[in-house]
Length: 342
Ligand SMILES: *[C@@H]1O[C@H](CO)[C@@H](O)[C@H](O)[C@H]1NC(C)=O
Ligand SMILES: *[C@@H]1O[C@H](CO)[C@@H](O)[C@H](O)[C@H]1NC(C)=O
Ligand SMILES: *[C@@H]1O[C@H](CO)[C@@H](O)[C@H](O)[C@H]1NC(C)=O
Image (cartoon, protein in one colour):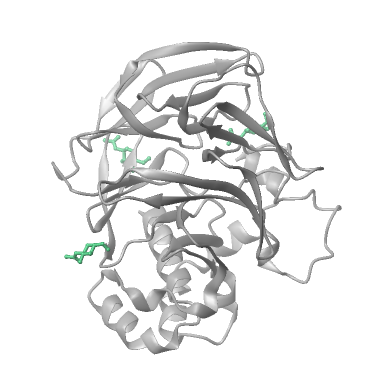
């Protein structure tokens, strides 16, 4: 519950940051115990990157790309835009099909194209400085020193989604014809996971449970060898998205079903969130929890939760967030090693 509240608060606080024109809207939403996300939650002042195509994925790696060891780097001026994120651009057709427009590394507002046909990115929560990309011709990994994508292993399948298991060399990759591959031995061995059928997209929680949804927009989780369907979600939605969780949620992931947020857990339970989306982001990145990124209208928006709490903006929020101050501070002061050992 506390976590649910936290994720809600961080999302809404993030989305509302420095959007004073929407203060009334937000206060009204709070009174109703439901936050309604509207156009006003995406002010230009929070846009950190503008593309010519839709932003369809954003990943903020929780590894040494973004978390230096404590001694290493205290030199930044708290500039959050220095986070390394990977973004995937595409032109989304009316029928939902995507035309690749490249996978980019985005840092400090500068985007570098890494792959023409990159479709997804994943990273472990460890001390490495890398990430893995699903592309039309297999798996690539990120070489931070050269800011480049390099071919990883021998898989050459046409891939649409990827997830990196933490603490082992296992990578799950989903092919364009919806076959789930388990890739090991540094990318040289692959086997089909035939328990998982018709997956459209895959993500992992922080306990390495694999979540996916099928073409009829049902959501499932693979725990060990067992597949469970989430029965508590609305049937036959017209829109569904599964989201990489904020690191405060260990064994579950957020799901957006039509215009409503939910949390689904490893144990098969479903919880309704209290966010309603009148407008929907096209991509979500809440992994880092206190710095979040969303794609909307071909732009990437950055939300810094601490700025809201420590700053003088939006007093309604501050009181709303008061209850959460302890957990927020404990998260904020965790070092990355606390995080990965959590
Ligand atoms: C992730 O893997 C790293 C390195 O193997 C390990 O130290 C850490 O505890 C793992 N984190 C989680 C959340 O399992
Ligand atoms: C399922 O897991 C969630 C999150 O850990 C927990 O809040 C809930 O009580 C669990 N439900 C059951 C039936 O075990
Ligand atoms: C649901 O979200 C879609 C996409 O943003 C929007 O067009 C629609 O109006 C929303 N519906 C409701 C009931 O909020």
